[in-house]
Image (cartoon, rainbow, N blue to C red; front, side, top):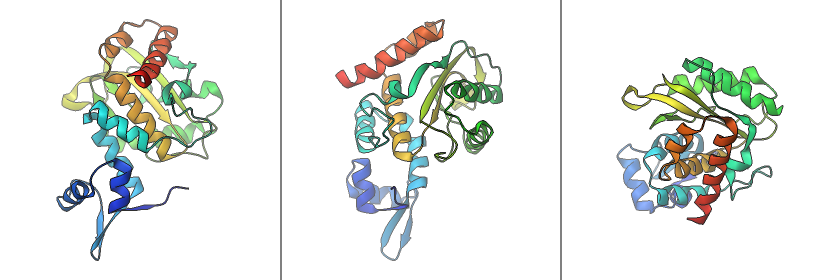
Length: 237
């Protein structure tokens, strides 16, 4: 079971960093935490959200450390290939017929629902929309990772990923108002799995030419094969 708070030393181990670096970030207000007496405490939910925002700027090596640290314990996840173990051909939609941010989210939840693992579609959509209202999950380069703010173990059966690409970019709150056309909906039952999947997706999308390949893929089958091949190739690099 995940506990609610990290000490400074625990967080340093979780992130694979020196505790002095974490202390410096905390003292400068660059990492969410609070001081109780002489000791720093860091709430796990706040750290998860902080990592989501920071991760897009990480190098492959930094993402690999993070992925190893948060390696999933979920029995339904193959932690060696976390993306392709949660993505299926039926949860890939290319082209994704959506022209607005809301219709993208609605369409992705509908695609995910093909698996019959979405027990409460309205609850899932509401949670994903609330996360987007808080801060866009668009990370740049035309990519977004919609997901709930917190895991929804009571609303989904097995964890899953739904992928969609619109043939034209849409406003999704990306950096510098850039348009977004590639979307990975991430639905996990715990924060550990969620962070490993995010880290692995970050590594996949840093592979040379991968985004171009996805944008040239005209259908779901081709897109699915590209993503699964990339997920496996990360282990070989």
